[in-house]
Length: 318
Image 1 (cartoon, one colour):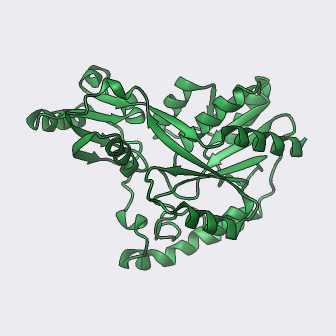
Image 2: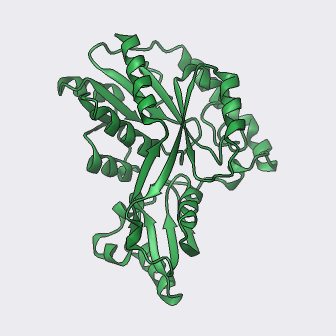
């Protein structure tokens, strides 16, 4: 079952609901404590990278994973992406498979073993930082810079899987920037206070082939992703006239009647309809012609520095 993210998670200060749920956060703390006691495996025949998050959803880990795949494959690494199979996340799996070599399984260790069998020497996991059974060679954490830590509380009182002190054990951070007014110096300072050696890279989202859209039109947008706000901001920043928005739970499973309702609203108000590339995958085929999707181009600052950093970390493990 997919559930909408509670709005109070993203407020900078905890509200009444956050305080009520706070006692339940100790379950997360207890679970994290016992997971630390689990022995960790290392894999000698393949190098492992994990791109994950400590903020639940909408931090850009999938496009970041794809970008790393492209950069490292160009450097002659026999690279593959690993993704643990979840029946309610087929959208991400299809998106990855369309753009990269992908191995999926319900067990991450089985994914690694299969990658070795297929002669890959580097695997990048999309998600899995909280997997405690083995230790990745390089671990990256993704954040949406505007939301940052939300209210700063652990689940279910807030959006965090782990608190900020967990950054001590990670190698790098990706900050997805959707709002130029975000105080990046403040965020960077907070990160460096926890881990002075961690590398920080800024990432950006651009719209591919924006010329195919008429910016004088009015648009209805809909999405079922981890952070629907960022989707709307990207469009507004590119001068789209967004007059109607439908926000659905992450990994939403679209049926005909859902799309018909959206199209009916759009027709009534003379609006064009746009959704994300990830949502578009799940729309029934006979309705796809009625809807436009936005394909993004993911950019990372200092890409050469990033590649050299990864190569140096790989060399350290040899």
